[in-house]
Length: 245
Length: 286
Image (cartoon, rainbow over all chains, first blue to last red; front, side):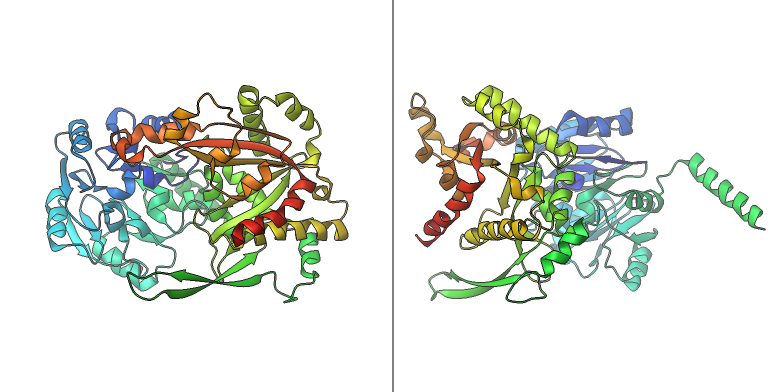
């Protein structure tokens, strides 16, 4: 299911939160409304951890992670790192990365199997990503943009990319990732996909301004629809076809 | 209604008759590490409000009520739809807006967001305003009050500011000629919600002094200082937002003991505002 929410009037959910299949990080200082949307949807199945990175709240853009691990930038303090490590499940490896491109969330887009990274990321960082997150790593661009983590967002079932991505690029990326991809927008036409949306295999959260068309696209491409709803749609379609015949 | 106003807009006497834009070239000097001064020419364009600017306007409006949750998207929509009054400054062929000014008629707009803003002003006024009675009296005729929204990025070239305000003045004059029945032509007062800062050290020293000394304040927008001097009602209070961000960056406090943020709310008569615009230009020339 895709849910709409806001962090202190900002529709940039993906800036203030990070969602994976094993845990969820949220920034400090938001209203109870924001946290309750996450907690009610994710329930007891995964920990919702309040944290900051380098004293800032833009944790979604600074960190990269999946169910296997979490990478934090060198701006993360020891205290914050300790707190995150203590709150995360034991299976999740946490590593601090010494990299000049410290906004890891903007430079890395990943699911539990594959990661796309910024073309200028260090070789060492690439190896750390492959090792800690347990993924296959590809250096690529999305719609001629090097900030792959900003302009695309994917889970294990599907992905959404920048609206100006060409068909050829879509095919190429879908091949690399082995999942269906779709070009689209969030938050009423914003092309900064990952700042407006966080998604895992069972839930997605996007800004309040996201239109119902955008939500429909999100639910379809990330395969978040209820199985019952999907069956119902198929049934309705079949009935309509029968009537037309 | 909107369509009608857009048609009227195009008949205005501009230098470029068909365009709704004015280009102003602003040469800005830049120093380059011991090299000779380099001049970069930037072209700014002044535009009418437009739906394409929605995202920029919404970003500006997010912090309007100190981070309190309110319908900022609705407000951004209303601003973008009001073509007849309002000016945006941006660049050619780009939808990003660097600053804008507009006036919304509080009594005419049927939207929850105006109610939320008025409720906020009323609550703060009850707590902090010595002239609360006067404010309530003025608010009894909401159709005579305009919400004056004046936002821009922090480092926008100051030379552009008088132009933004002058454009508003021209818009009002044009409306008075072309559509005198428009509610925006009959405003008496402007309500302004804005920000100012005070040095942390000074705060401790001047605690016993009168809090109405404008010279102690550092204004985020310099023209607020000019307008405040002619305001009929004004009050200020500590910004709630600054307390929240301190919560996150407490451990970095030694580097941030700079300034305390105050919210300012004031009412100025429309005729005084229009008269003071000329004084803003003097500030820029200094």
